[in-house]
Image (tube, rainbow, N blue to C red; front, side, top):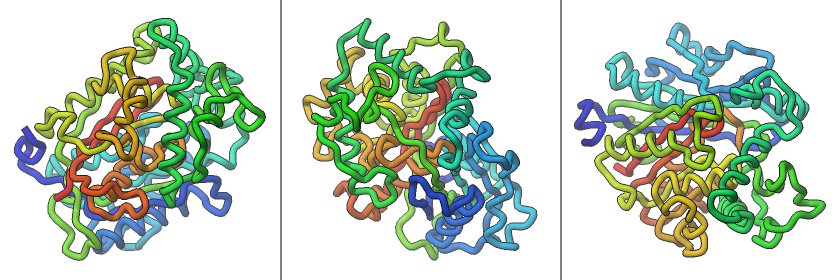
Length: 395
């Protein structure tokens, strides 16, 4: 049963905005939010006064001094004075958490037009502060010190996977090279340089080990950036392009303590994926592509299995068979993913929805996948603890 049939309400993405991702020294958190939100409003062809509610996805966790950022989007226009605005946090899935809150406001009938923004300012902070902030999303290490941070946690996933199944060093290098190739076509990407499989698969001065066995090319970069989307219950007459419809969505949270989770399963991802597809009334074979959360290359590999592309332990197969490449039957991360596009934590989920909407509306430029009609977005927070999936379709 589709979302519109189940709830009797269309959810349309009618406009969007996206900043450059990268080291943006000239920007503050405020300027990033205002720029992306203003672009989304302009793209939707609406007046700021038409917005009924605002949701901001931002992790922060001490990365930026202002801990109360919900009203920053109001700086766009005096017409936004007194509009309800709420900051939403769910670790690296904060952007998708904000997106789903906006969806639920429309479904509840309390809003007809919602502005969703995801933003993070990170690169100004020293590495030690960034590491401490991100570890605030880990049950065991929050408040402590770790030389390798979240890279060390995903390195544990690699070792657990290899102990149970097989070596994945080459598979991770193929994922990194694939996503860099895709990211080179994305004008918003933090890292636009194509990298060969050989480079990604070799430890060198330019590609050192970050947390054994993860190399630098296995890790997404620390980035600044913002993205925004306008959600409406009906089309925007003045929009610059066709809208994109949300057909289904799902959320699932796994346990925080690591002993209660299987590090190689991403069970919450599987549950969120199945809920979103069920609501949309489609199967995986009805999708043309997906944007998934590849904070580390091992994460993308495990997601292949969690969403049913292969049986457990066989994720590398879709790389050798070419399935997940741009010219394959089910491309993954046409935008370059977090690995190349960048990972400004709170912005990531909204960015994934924006680049997917661009594909489905035929406005993705050099990234465009010809004929794309339906796709999925997967975003997760922590060690696959908070999991969100959306199914989007061309109208």
